[in-house]
Image 1 (cartoon, helix red, strand yellow):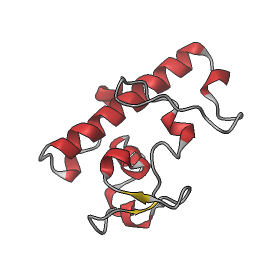
Image 2 (cartoon, rainbow, N blue to C red; image 1 turned 90 degrees about the vertical axis):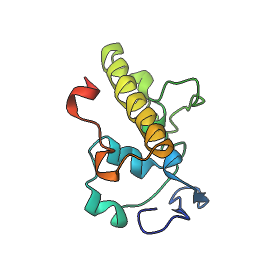
Image 3 (cartoon, helix red, strand yellow; image 1 turned 45 degrees about the vertical axis):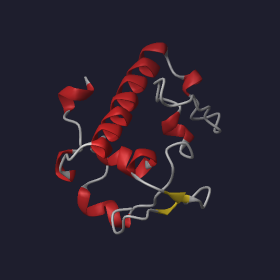
Image 4 (tube, rainbow, N blue to C red; image 1 turned 60 degrees about the horizontal axis):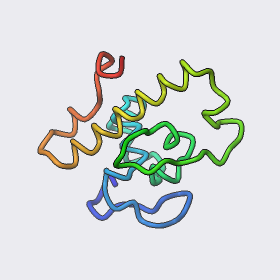
Length: 117
């Protein structure tokens, strides 16, 4: 998605990731895990196809996702760790939605550490 406005194919389901609202790559960018210069080189996938991350998004606008890998399923985490991950991924997903809907410059997409606390 970083190189064109039409999106890239999801490396899991092979369908197009139409925009950043559904992009797991941009979700990781918002989280600060992927630097901007790496966006063109990283694989793209739908957030919903990355169940290891999607399971932590808890928002009325995002239907719940179950993780398809038992080793990564959030149900196996301690409650406090699960709650922290849900807070972080939900905040990042909401930020991604905000970025799409506004004229926020791309270099301001990533959340600051204090936004994730």
